[in-house]
Image 1 (tube, rainbow, N blue to C red):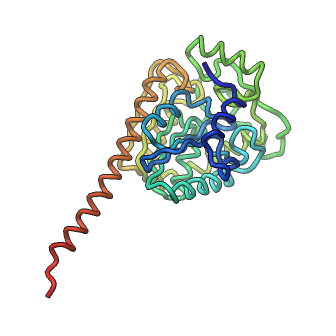
Image 2: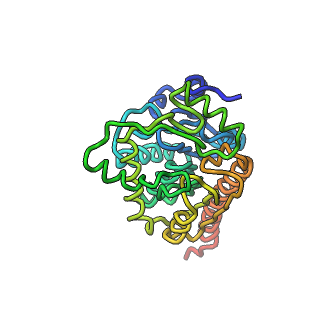
Length: 305
């Protein structure tokens, strides 16, 4: 059973410190020293992440969904550079009380995470689920690329409404989402509609991301569908060729569309995401411990004359 968006926020506030209520949609503290930031799609909510939040909490990690002005659901409007700046504020805040931070992003959330790391150089491991670096999937209208110029000329007083197949191949989940879109503003696949202003900022984010992709050097795991209705495999191949990571893992799914966290292979997505998070966490902790032991050994064996 899925909580609606209002119930989800009320539940999250029960575990959220009062001073963080304005900064996070959800904040569940952990005990391991790792904080995992979850970034849903543009104007989306934690509902889009499926079972990933629950799985992260089960490992004892801090799990949080930041409220990013202009990006998060029902957060108003702001430009993409503010999205990046607010995400940096969240990362810095978490690093005050955690030894490590990782990010899991879905759709435009994955694009935001990759762009943030390339721009701010924090060496944060990222799980990128269906990252968007071009709207070139098979369900995207042929005229979509022209919208960038429409926005630039100031025609922004309109909304784009979600339509079939909603990024979902699974017919049961698709029917459930179709009903939600008629009744709710925020659904499992994000906002029922997006303003032209928000869409324009997403295109500006992609444009900026492409310029600095070579500056991305952190560990990354990309999970995406070969039959994604929003993003073609060509865009994913471009991303893998452009970033400078020494560790870049990619998993192609064959039975899902864009919202892979809710679709037919959602269990694979959860398992692979957690495996990468754990691998990165333990590897970095081992490096710290090894470095600490090496320093102690050097001091202990030093001959004092």
